[in-house]
Length: 122
Image (cartoon, rainbow, N blue to C red; front, side):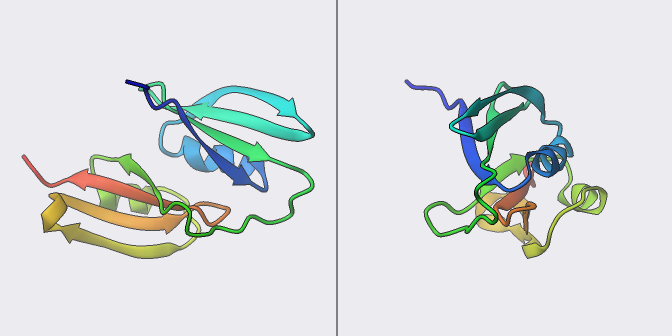
């Protein structure tokens, strides 16, 4: 089995994106420059990293339909949504009985969709 290690997001400001994901407990891990682009990593307590690729030649990021969203588990969707800085609600908060979860979808600084998931199962 090949373990999941990271997701790479193209971003327009690595500092702003790092601060956004730090709200969820991610911490700076490492960075390097490659072909003029900064590749900064933030890591969660389970060792999963998000790579924030900041190319100074790219002024804006277009979010398409190649992938949908990044999901993060939380204890309380409502508490987290009230606590964090986000860049626009997409959907929710709402209970999804079929999934046994309360969820909310919102955007990060570059328009990537992030979902918070709270288990409704005891």
